[in-house]
Length: 285
Image (cartoon, rainbow, N blue to C red; front, side, top):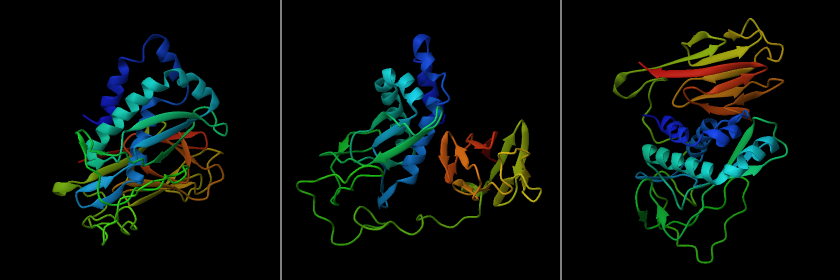
């Protein structure tokens, strides 16, 4: 069973009575959970061949209406989201430098239903391995603060190793590309392939090539008859992982509730272009 599905099941015992009212806004807990997963993937740092470190301190910025609905339950929801991150890290074999925390904050520049995630890596005296007891910290120095945070002071930083660890690490630039053997687009272990498609207003459009352009032009691979959609609005690129890229559109794209120009896609990702919602799907087979 997937981590997000387990997270939804845990919420079933919470989303009852008064607590259910806070989820009548556009922002749904599972969307935030998916954004936290992507934040881990996008900020993973390879320490060595056996250890990949991801952020452990997260800030979820919400619009004023959504924050006012969710803030009375921020502690309970933050604990559930932190548990989801811990489960996901265990599944992906990620490691943390300290305890996992998820905080909610108000952002006046966000409209109802939109949110933004920031993260940083905060080191404690002992580092925490996912799903297990605390382990001794590695020899390299502490990572500075992440996006949106000032660098973290350290009164006595541990010594740096004399040579970079394999694959890069803190204090060393990451490798130019993931340390994985090359594979054909969509290929899965064991020789099977991943099928990709999108759903628009109940109609399925198969993605049979490495790229798929969405737009209002008849030259687009999938034409969307929506005045808010540009002639060549965005492009989906299949791979591991699949991504979506804005092509300089007028109104931009929203992926899983977040305005962006580029994002990683997962099965079930919701893409909004103009006033049209596109559901991205993928399955092995």
